[in-house]
Length: 223
Image 1 (cartoon, rainbow, N blue to C red):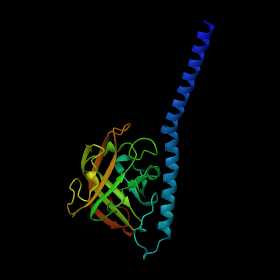
Image 2 (image 1 turned 90 degrees about the vertical axis):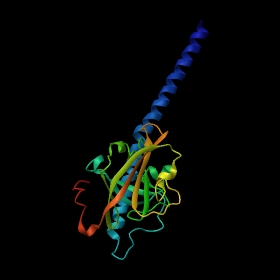
Image 3 (image 1 turned 120 degrees about the vertical axis):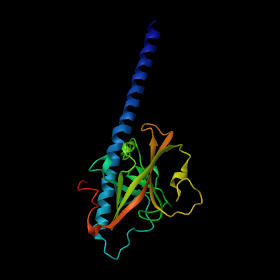
Image 4 (image 1 turned 180 degrees about the vertical axis):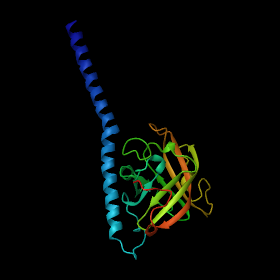
């Protein structure tokens, strides 16, 4: 009997220890990765704005080739808050996506003909697209570069399987088609706490203006 009690006690202690470890891991995923990602995104935004402040009128809009994990633009989505502002970094690796929203390499750049495509986490690691499902068709999405404000209008929302990578083609879901429009695509996991689907938004460019002319009137003064 004593041996059985001792065994039960050891098993109980092991289960408690395992439970604590699981809780710590969950806490790390839900809290600490967001803290780290927020710091990284802030650092990327600050470095980007510093580069912009130092640029001259003769400098190109983008420093090509883009460096993996480095910010080259800022994203604003008023539907997600007046102060919503996230750096857009090059690449969609886990490291890049922990610094902001990631640009799919080889897709168009802001304002270009084709499909400027980005991805973002919906849970943990800063979760910049946590509430992307609240965006509606007709909403504006703003992209700020060193020289220009680009305004995109959301034209389509749908859900696909993770294997349907055609959503980021120059003409979405039309392999080999020649692009004629200036599009933007936003992708993220669906539902929020899982990854067996992808939530997709397509938007079209509706306005492009030099930053010397001020912010787009529909953006307002927040952020």
